[in-house]
Image (cartoon, rainbow, N blue to C red; front, side, top):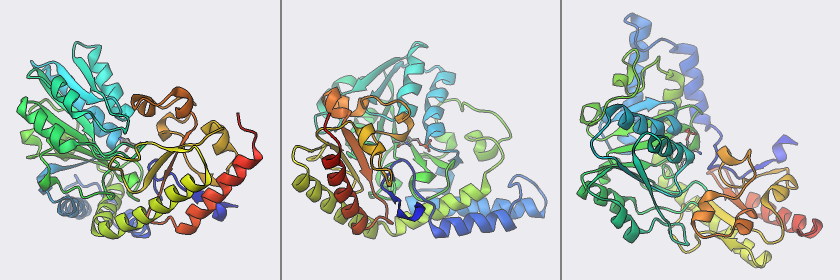
Length: 382
Ligand code: PMP
C-alpha cells in the first residue's frame, strides 16, 4: 500500500533527497566528532562544520559570518522575540502580519503580555499584506517588523522588500520568515536588505530539526541581547553541541535547491497549471485562494464545495494533503490565514492545501483530481 501513497503536502515537510541522505549517513559514520573538541576528531568535525557554512553562504549569496545553524524556524522565530524581551528596547511597537506562522504570531503575543504593543498588518482578499495599512502601522516607535516571505497555507508571496524599506525608514529592524520561499523563488540575501531571516531544513528535502538563522552583518551587528547562553557554539546564537549530520544534510539540501532553482520553478509551475486547470474544469464552484496574487508555484489552496476538508481528507487515504498548516491540523477548525483574507468560516473549513515537490509528477496530479472527483460523487455533500 505504501508505494501507492501520493504525497502532496510538501509545505508541511519534504522527503530527504538522496544526496542529503548520503551526506548525513557518511557524516554519521565517519565524522561523528564534536566540532568544539580540540583533538583530531574534533578538528575534523569543525572543518566539516565550517565547510557546510561556506556552502550555505555561497548558495544564499551572503557571508559565512552571517549564517548560524539552529534547530529550525520555530527556534529562529522565537529567538528574535526572546532577544527583544531580554534587551528591553526603548521602542515598544512590534508589527507583524496577521497571517504569520504561529511561531511568530504566538511569540509576538507573548511579548504583548509583557508590555510590548503588537499590531497586525491586515491582508487583502488575495492574502497579500496591505501596504497602505502597513505604512500607517509602522511608526517611529516600531522596534521590529516581521513578515513571512510566502504564506505556508496559500503560497501567496508577500511584498517583503517594500516592508523592509518601510521598517528601515522608521528605524526598525526587519525580519523575514523565509521558510516557504527557499527553493521556490530567488532568495539571494545580497539582493535583500533583511536584518534577520529564518529558514528551515525539512522544507527543502533536508533533515528535520535543522535550520538557519541569517543575521545581516554577523552576530556583532545584532543590536539586542542574545537570548540563550551555553557553550558558545554559533557565537552563542545557538549554543549547544552542533548537530553535525543535520548541518551537513542541510547544507547539501540548500545547495541542491538553489542550484536547481530554475528547473524546480519550471516543474512546479507546470504542475500547478495542470492542477488548477483540472480543478476548475471538473469541480464547479471550487475557489482557489489567492488566485490572482503572486504565489509560490508549488502551492494551491482550494475550497471544495460540499464537504468539510477533514471528511474529504479522511476519505482519500492514499493522498497526503492538508487542511491548513500541519501544526494546526490536530485541531480541526477554520484557518486564521484564510479568515484574515475575509474567507467565511464555512468556506475555510472546506479548504485543502496541495503542495508539490520536485518528486511530484503530472500523473500524481491527475490521480489526485480523479480521486477527488470520485470521492465527491460517492460522499453525500454536507
Ligand atoms: N514558518 C513557516 C512559514 C512555516 O511554514 C514553518 C513550518 N510549518 C515554520 C515557520 C516552522 O518551521 P520548523 O518546522 O523548522 O520549526
